[in-house]
Length: 542
Image 1: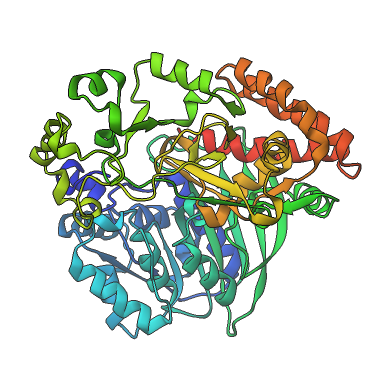
Image 2 (image 1 turned 180 degrees about the vertical axis):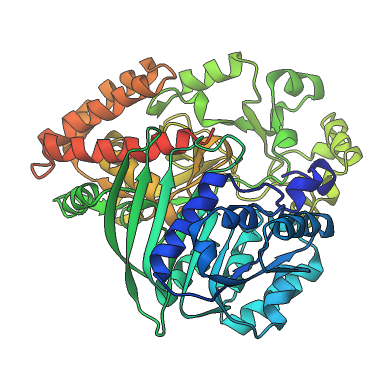
């Protein structure tokens, strides 16, 4: 995470502006929703440099507009926007104000709301704004707990100022599908809007836009509903368009699955109901592993062990999932990890071991104190600060973050993991069945559900938290165990390309088809097509 002084002023205020194509698409959609209505009023909650004012001056919707009201926090930008309207004889008023404060205090209502809300992480939002967001939440009935980005309250504040029957079209980040905090937006849209549509674009379609965006649009309705139909429109690079619809319930976690066509979702539902397909959380517990509070310090290399005489307090460590090349992490694999020169050991100052403060190891502890490690929150609440709690290994290891796809590994070396790799075990009823789970994990169904349940971050990284992992659909059958050694060899031989990584999935699918009759080749082929569709969209964010 970057500090405020490392971020540009433009990024701190979300100062990235809207391409003309997206502005036009918003107005095209608004005109479609309002029809021939005249004398309409338009609200834009984050005017910026006036992209939406500029776009309106050349759009046929302008003939139906009576007034345009905008809010912009930067006075200089507000003045730029006004200068556009002055040259086009457009009736525009812009308040130089904070959009959140404005939406808390105003009683004004509008026929149309459009815009591109500022994309600003909460760690860069002043505390005064956080109080305003809390007040907005009370006004519109949203808690905003766990909200991570400013675009969410700005958008909902604007949508709350629409008349019933009013139309909206906004450019928003693609995290609307996956973000936990964007759940407030998803719920609000489903409960308060009809004619919902989301326009999708291939990542990179707009080079000046730093994150993947979509256009969400709809019409304000008078009563709340528990489910809604959303139309999805995918725009190709050559102007080709494909459309599909999904009936969406408000209790669904995330909307990533709806980026898939109904054909894909039908296949997912069919496979999920097959014999031996279970939720991962029903057979195993995957949890956050050892939290040291300073991984780089408590993880040590062989050289550091010798230099500070730390031999009495070390235990084998898998520092990153990439050092587990196969599906089995053996003692030989750990020897290879050690020889690579990385920090393959974890310090464990257990009270049953010799006191490090009367040994040469005390020198290493003093180094940590000189670095101020003992004052960090996670270390300062421990006595002594250098004694890490919960130092134990489990039989399963699962990557917390992944590029190609999550990997589940059998921990035959008894290696520890820090919070960069999850540790796990079978629940009591299924103790001893780790090989069955590892052998069948890397298939198209399970990895598709990982794409659906997880969240994508910068560079296209996929991250899963334990609650999401528990919802993964996995085959649980003994019939794949004889293939584990073969699958381990395939995993080790795969090189770092998307196509090569797919070899393990293809091999697992092959054995799965023979083991679970309902999982046909055609069905798994459809699931793999769906998985690759979501994965490639995620990769393209890099």
